[in-house]
Image (cartoon, rainbow, N blue to C red; front, side, top):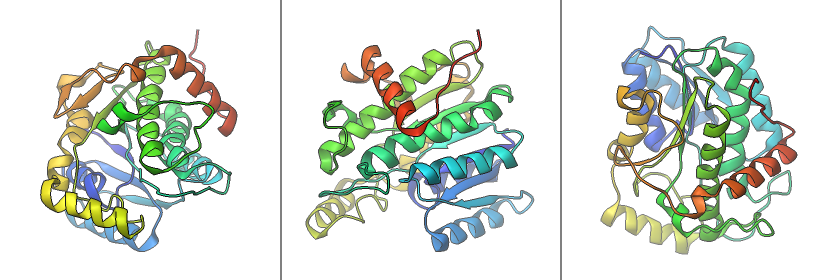
Length: 280
């Protein structure tokens, strides 16, 4: 079983379910929280289920490139070994919003944070045999179109675009890590009744809450594929996949574009100042 697991988006929903499950299995959890109170509550839960492990909380706003880089560097400096990275933090933002970097928070939080955390922690993952990266995407990627002239947008279209970006990121990183030992896969957890869309205004929040009550999965149900990709021996050595209900599924045609995957990677490198070139 894993020794050290890094998770974003672990203070609620499927991320918290996965964190507690892996802790019960003996993993030491290192997680990133935006809210100090929710982070402290999650840390307390982890200490109850696995008091023998020195779990760690880091506070950071993953919509800020500076914060992404700061917390990623701090974790890399503190953790000589990382067995698993779960890129799970994400949100939907309605209306017009901009981060401190002038970016749409959908693009920054849902895509760039995955890119930055993965690249900064990659040396630690590469030093660990059998290490895995798992990224939470969504079936919403099917409705996304990567318009490079309109990447900075929010709303449902911006959210779908960011979930498509997750799959293109996984595709490109899997290609770069083809002979590196670290695997990277993505998943759709289903429509889960979590805090998703609670940050939106009344019309959208009310609609989403109605859908959660009428058709939403429980966080435990939604976490099944995330946990499966994190620990199942069935996916050992498999990389670049998209999974739904613990089974591989072919994503949309747009998510299989090598040209878009490369262009998105290059843009992400330009925005963050981080890049990765595999050893010859």
